[in-house]
Length: 484
Image (tube, rainbow, N blue to C red; front, side):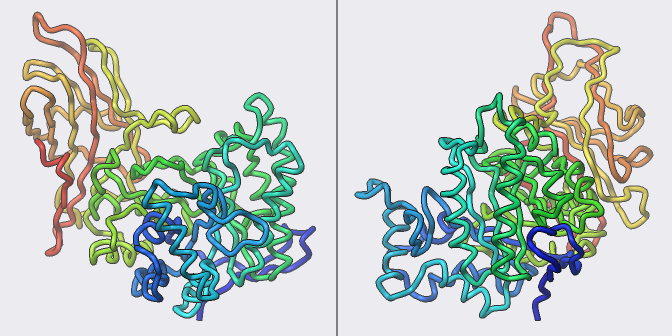
C-alpha cells in the first residue's frame, strides 16, 4: 500500500502539525511531450497512452510528476486552451502528433490527463500534476493574471491526484526586474491561496514547488521560498535550473535544506542526465556520484529529469532502481565531475568554476575549484582514487602546481597524455593525498611557461573516479572522455 501524507488543521493554519511525509519518495518527471505525445503517430492506442507509467514499473520510482502545460493544458480543459491549439494548422510534425494523439483519446470519450492518472493508480504509483506558472510575457502583479492561473490550477486539482506542483523555473519573469523583491508578498499570497485550494480538495494532497537551487536566486525573482517553507505553504521544493540539463553533482541547494529544516517540508533535487553538454549522457558511475552527493547534502528524495536515453533500457531502469535508497549507491564505483558554466544559469547567480582560464603564469596565484564528495576516500574498501584534469593550451615544459585541500600533489603518481595539439590530460593516482568526505578545494597554479610562450592555459575538466574494486566494477566513459 502506498504511504500517503496526512494534513491536520484548516487551510488558514497550514503550518499546523502534520503526519511525516514519506522521506524516500522517488519521482520521475515526464513533460507529456518529448517521450510521449511527440513520439507516436495518431491515433493513440492503449499501450502507447499508458507508456509514461508502464515504462517505470519494476523500478524504485513511486511517484510520477506529469508536466501538463505548454501554452495550454494536456487535458480536456474547460478553463484553459488545449496545448498546441494556437499553432493550428501545423508545420511541425511534433505539434501535429501531440494534438492528434490527444484528439484520438478525446474522440474515444477519454480525457488525455485522466488516462495517465488512472493508469498510475492502477499500477500503484502516486501522481503529481506539474504546471508551469509563468510564461515570460505576463505580469503577476496584475490580479487578473493570477486569477487566470489560479483557475487552471483549480481545475487540475479537481482530478484525483496526490498533489500539485508549481513549476516556477520556466521563464521565471513574474514581475518587472526592479520590482521583483517588492512583489514577493504578492507571490507568497498567491502560493498560499493555491495551497489552501489544493488541500481543500483532499486533506492528503501535497503541494510542491520547482524552484531555483538557492534561496538568494529565488528571492531575487520575488519568490520568498523561505516563507513558503516556514509557513508550510509548500510540502516540498525541487531545486533545479530549467534548460540546464547538465548533471551537476555540486548542485548548491544547501540553503534550501537549511530553510526546510524543522518545518517538516522536503527537498527533492532534480537529477539531470547529461555529461557537460547535451550531446553525451552521463555514465551510471557519474549518476551514482551525483545521487550520493545529493543524499549527503540533505535531500529527502529525488526527482529524475526525463532526458535519458529513450525508450528506457535496462541501464536506465537499473539506475531508477538504485536511487530509491541512499544505501544502494554506497560503496559502489562513482565518477564525480564538475559541471561546466552555463551563461543563463550564471546570469541568475548559479555559476560553475569551469572552464577556468588562467591567463598568465604567476607562481603565487592559486586558482580554486571547489567540489563535493560523498565518499570517504580513506576507507580500505576503496581500491583506487583517480583525479583527472583536462588542460587546454598546455605544453610539456609548463610548470603546473596542483594542490588538493592545500597540499601539493607533487608526490602523487601522475600520467600525462596529449590529445593532438588541443589539450592534455593529467591523470593522478592518489594514494597519500585523497579528497575528504564533504567539501574539497582543488587549486591550480601556472607557475611558469617556457621561453617564447606567453598567455595562459584553461582548466576545462575536473573529475574524480572512485573504484571499489568489486567484480562488477567498470567505469563507462562517454566518447568525450575517451579522447585522451
